[in-house]
Amino acid sequence: MTAVQLRRRAALDIPATAAAAIATARELAAEFGPGAAARDADRRLPFEQVARMRESGLLAIGIPTDDGGPGLPPSVIAQTTAIIAAADPNIAQIPHSHYVYLGLVRLAALPPLRRRIFDGVLAGGQVANAQTERGRKTAADVATTLRRDGAGYRLDGAKFYCTGSLFADTLAVLAQLDDPFDGGEPGQYVAFIPADAPGVQIADDWDALGQRTTASGTITFDGVAVPADAIAPRALATSCPTGYGAVAQLLHAAIDTGIGRGALAAAAEFVKTKSRPWFEAGVDRAVDDPLLVQRFGELSVTVTAAEAALTAAGVQVDQAVARPCAENAAEASLAVAAAKILADRAATEVPSALFEVGGTRAAGAGNGLDHFLRNGRTHTLHDPVRWKYQHLGRALLRDELPPLHSAL
Image (cartoon, rainbow, N blue to C red; front, side, top):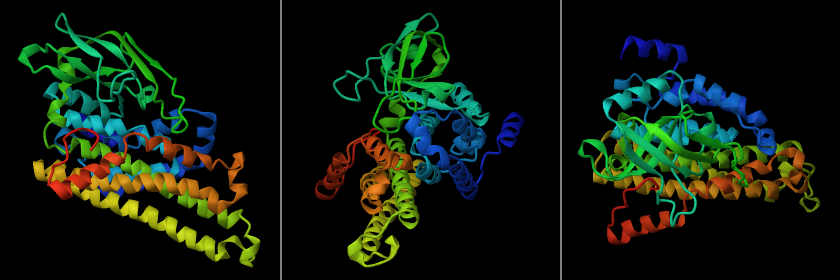
């Protein structure tokens, strides 16, 4: 570790252990939770909160030790993500692609790019994605292009669902490159460019039902100059058994699991402080209604199962990242598929049941409880769990290894 990196780490006070990272996440969650519903209702982007998260050093916990970071594994990042998601699902999703693309840098970037990105994050920087496009046949199709232009490349195209882009210093842009320098293979490459580079326009046009403050809008690229050393081939991460996709999905599952836990906590607090008992229960307090107690027990099992599956999947993903091979990658993807299914259930069933157990009063706009329902329903649409069942079933019945891509 260089002296510069040591100074940066000291300045940011990057959590160096799992316990420290979890403690930092809990501290941030306590700060973010009280204003989450109001920010969501008014669609006020959490610039102050994201800056606080950057300053906490949490965004640097996955940087390898050889590069000046603490090298904490994906399971710890997932735990911190779930903790923050229980308080504010929007903020929890914002750094998702940051963590994922730092993984791509580790796997595919040449040393100059690797040093630039990691040093930037160690100094408090943040990466956001510009990956998916509208109007294509599938979400995996890419029309954005990198073309040779002098000693570098020219980037042109448009992206949507660019989560966190308004908060980031660096954009990770997925593009098609057909004639790379130095005889490289044609295919999909990721260009790491400054978010304020000439030719970049970021539009705050995200208008979804939920996850309203994630800044997941549109970015257009018009003749953006990209140095030749600012790109990395995506295939090195997605076409080999690296665990890259499993990491991405583990963090999605963490967000959904956190939403379930946050909704359950909000439901319990509402029933304990505001709900009235149903007259047929013959009790004085809602918390003494036996049918209500039963329902809370059922919801608790749903959330606890999702959390347990997330923990189990985290162990497998850590193994796949630390010791990449076909067997470890397959086990990680399947474990994450199961975790994602249970997390999806927790993020949709529990926020809906919040109103069931809270009663009519819970539906009042002033309570702000609907943000769990809208956020859970929106985020779980990211990739369909019906395909998770498919991959689990194929592995059991046909001994088929799950495919290598970023959504499993």
